[in-house]
Image (cartoon, rainbow, N blue to C red; front, side):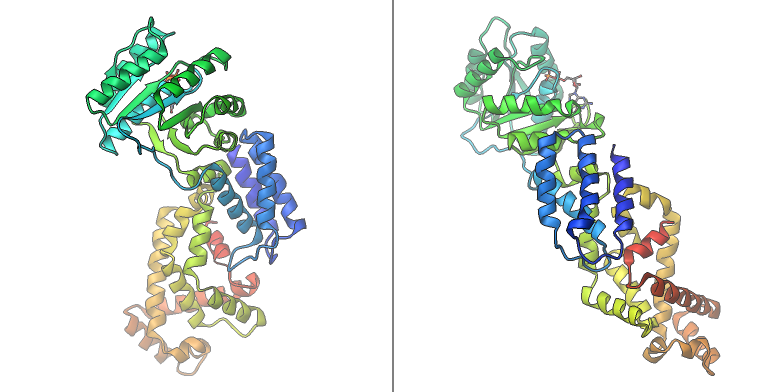
Length: 450
Ligand code: GDP
């Protein structure tokens, strides 16, 4: 389950602290956890094996930058690779055809084909401003034809009638003809599904495909099928040149592993995800977000990018060196840390990107207070002279400390006590920095998170 993966990985992330690069030995444990987690997420075994090999390849020897540790870097590699395996970015429906663009919906009975056909119609009408016609070629279940009629109406699209005594091929041709004559942009063809793969069904849908030349052939699959989705996907891929996948019932699937298997087996991009029974419960599939969900780790990739983008790595390393060599962490460094945080969009922004369990520990009120404190501290630090920031001792035990503090307080528009408080905090932080041996924003945030 996702939550145990988070726990496992966070534990490993902790044990990998202080190691400068990813090596054969420190990567093993981590990969074992990832492998277990993927299997538990119901990803098919051969897919897992391939995946682990690719991650290992990418991870070995990877330099660990800034305040991240090898565990965090590895998690980010895993998430990126997951996202890449599930598809590059976002791919919408291809309508680049002489209108009407025909879209063929394929999949087992109960996968959600009819529902998805209507959802897709609505999507194309609202987002792509298309005139959409639907038709059902499911001649085995009169109820299926009626169901399509009902949901098509809900979608605001038009429905083309069909009947159980017709041949699927003839239905499709009649609908295509109607769509052409009435200037429809898109024709969505819903097809018959069986409870399991059978050759007659495959032959029928192959014939339909050859007759209407769809620009998109979408394989609709129930995410909750997990491992079984792989076999279904393989059978449909062998029968038809699939151009995309719609993963339905993602709302009921906490594991999310089917996405990985199905994508790998079909080689086709996952274009949409069904997220509710309702007509608007269709989302353009976002591989990266889904990868984060499979890992249950929040948006680590975004966090990693944020940390490496906002922070001047050279400056951070210099600071780390300074602390390590014992040459002192001064108030200028304190000010620099605060402005780095600000560059990254403040604490709240970073917290948003952390795994929820971690972020939940720091309440919004705490965050607001921390942000306010940070602003005030910045004001006080700016009211000091550069020399005072370089030599905090002037303010802590220098002869003129009282008058200096008065001047600073007046300059920043705060009480003297606040200046004292900042100096105390600085003192504490100096101690903390020494302990951490090498400035760690992540560590600081973890402290904040409890
Ligand atoms: P078909 O046999 O492939 O045409 O499947 P249907 O469209 O009739 O869907 C089968 C069942 O799955 C119906 O009860 C739908 O309401 C439900 N369903 C379809 N897509 C989703 C989804 O994304 N989320 C949820 N929760 N239910 C869905």
